[in-house]
Image 1 (cartoon, rainbow, N blue to C red):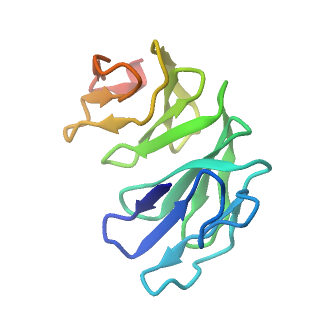
Image 2: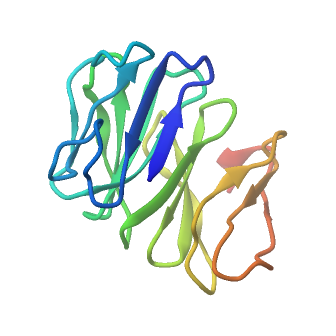
Length: 168
C-alpha cells in the first residue's frame, strides 16, 4: 500500500498494489484525492495503466502519480487537472518524492534508477542515477543536499546534490 498526504494533513490519497482500495478505482488506473472528511477533491487522476506510486508537493497544491506505463504525471491537487506533459521513464514507477521547496522531484523506477525532475519546466535534471538492485523509495535530506534511495542492498550511498541544481 502507498499513502501520501499534504504537510497540513488536509488532503490525502492512497493506493494498494492491486488497486483495490477506497481511494483508487477497481482497475487501479485512477486516484481520487480526498479531504480529511473523505470527500473527493477535484476529478480523479487517470493513467492508462495501473498507478504504482504517488506523492504530494509540500504545499499540497500538486500531486504526482507514477504508473506501470513508465510515466509520471503532475496534477493540480485541487482540480484534478494535469499540469504539463507526462514525464517518461524506462520502467514502472516505484517511488516519487518532492523536495522540501517543491521545485524538484525524485522518481525511482523498476529499471534500478532514480531521476531528478524540475517540477516547473518538466525537464530532467542531469542523467539518471543507476543502482545495483531494486530501489524501494527515495528521500531528500532535510537540507535538500542529499538524496537517499533505500533498496535491496542496504549499503547504497547517498547522492550529494549540488546547491544549484540548474548546473547539473
